[in-house]
Length: 214
Image (cartoon, rainbow, N blue to C red; front, side):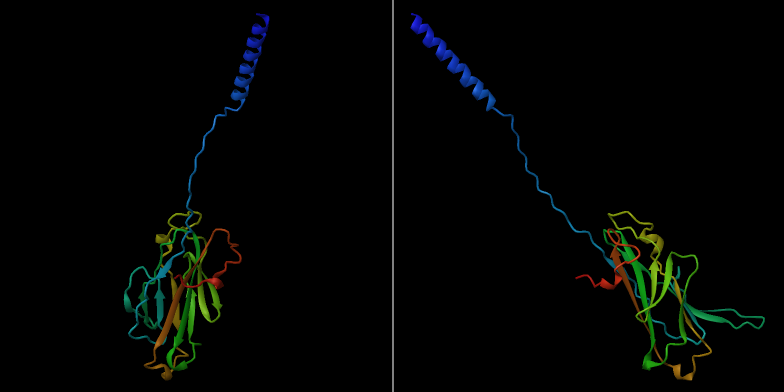
């Protein structure tokens, strides 16, 4: 009888030990897997065609970035002041990139037949948001003096609607534009460049690395 009780006690202890061991192995568990896709931002910039000019005169001023395309005009003279002639031509950039960007516009003006360009000069328009940087590799450079916001990334100073006009004036000096320029074409190339603003040193924007998007 005593032996039977001892066997039952031993069996009970073994069962208790097994239950404790089993309990220590019973972990609360859960698992979940998620997939994330990261899409690169875009820098996508364009520019309008500034339109051909049918005729230019020595002394004309060609105002690009005008609010309205008025074509050719003459301001009335008087009191010994010669009428000032010129063109108003709208020149606008478009930006559909998602990234905020630094933007600049490069302008190259050249007379046909390799006539000298010394009678041409560019001037900035006071009070606008573009800064004239002078000549770089033979091209006149106008740079937005801040960051243009993208459609997604908003870290800049400007929205495209506020700075889409690129205002500058091309001056044709009358005194140095002689008869050899009669009937000759004035060729202009205008290029707009954009570089992402994030992670870029504003004092060393790598515009020189800009290549056309595929």
